Length: 344
Ligand SMILES: [Zn+2]
Ligand SMILES: [Zn+2]
Image (tube, rainbow, N blue to C red):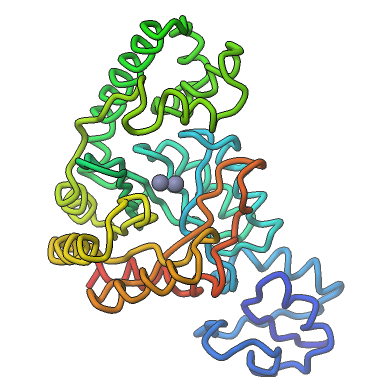
């Protein structure tokens, strides 16, 4: 009878174990120290054959140690195209081991994603991306939670949905005034119950033959300050940070570049949020230039924020796939650092 030690493996490492002497430390796998978190208790099983079957069976039971971590992704519960379970399946196939579901102003995809994560071995982090009211530019605030239904955030969400619907209706009215008679019911049907946003209006404009791409819809009508644009009266930045904190979550500033602030203004703004309790800032995003990476990384350092990030994946035509977090990629233990910071 053979006795085989099973390490907490990411899928790419599974293959290596077949030739690995039993009990070899993780570093022998050529993995940088710190990438693999050793199990506190070694898992052992008997009579293992074939190993793949065993590993498939074990993977859901071991803590995720995958190197690929993506803390920003959308499902069709907001403006993404995949149902939550499908997104988790895609992540699993791409060897993403930690995936945060961060739909706009809703937690509706979280439960389904968590269930699929348990079945596939992907560690799903419940999250949200809140729209924040700003005088200029646009601000999104990410929140990460251990609880899939964090109060008081859950109580606020119904209110967000009503506000978003009202705003979308006003934008459709403006489009009517511009000679584009969009059918409101078509906009609603296209959103399929997701919190309404400009992308849904853009899609309806494409279906109506008024524009050929989302970009054209935004450039001509829907962009901030565009002829059909309506501002929102959502939370302000500090209210958003407080709401996430009061709900037991870790607030993180998403894509700081969309604030459209120069260094002289961005630095004190981030400082204000840090004093309000901001825990992290997106530094690792695949579209960030080396300059942006350095600039936002320096901000994280200055204000003692965790450098977070993700792919912001929405759909197959998105420029980046789940798990793409830039170069260098997001650190594997980022989710634990973020959640640990608010559990302290
Ligand atoms: Zn965003
Ligand atoms: Zn996003």
